[in-house]
Length: 265
Image 1 (spheres, rainbow, N blue to C red):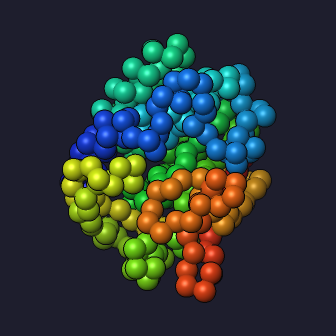
Image 2 (image 1 turned 90 degrees about the vertical axis):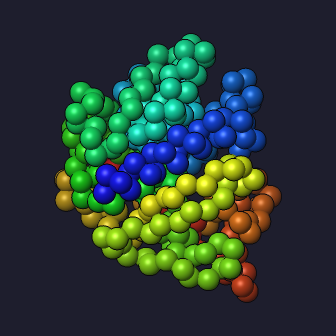
């Protein structure tokens, strides 16, 4: 497992400088004051975030973490990529926020961070890098205060079953101990980049995601599924009138694109 994480960490170290320069992340607009958060995350958490302590798991180079800080949260971001955390800290200093950033694999976070938080947040493309969601849920529980809120917005596991180029099912819905391995050119933020490193990932069903959190004693407040994505991050997406994107199968069939969970400890 350490070799899988080592390869994935190298991949995200390489992605970070490419992503910083990409139109996808639009750092010019972000520096000018635009939030990186989307309407659904803000709708579920934004009204009650000011003054709250927030832990952002798998934060990449910190755009969303800093966006929460801009809304008044006392934010801490965590990521296993050294380069991403370096950039997050630099952005924090440049923009004058007081967010904290910690380099750590999620599974090692107890050794690298102390305290509990009012909110634990994570979003978009995070679970696929984690082999064990039972252990992940225990980490969330460890860092969340009693009465605190856990919120995740994630791409839907049904969408992850597809080969997006061919529109054919290529991956299992249910997890297995052996990860998938791919070595593809580029990155979702810049398909033309020269990045080509082995990546290891896992598929997780909705049951495998929700049940470990329920076993930790969390109460489900809200569960949503969405027919669109705010990101043009995969092939064959159609832009909708509201600016979001949709992946359509033959015959115009629409699969779920995202899901969200809001839970209380």
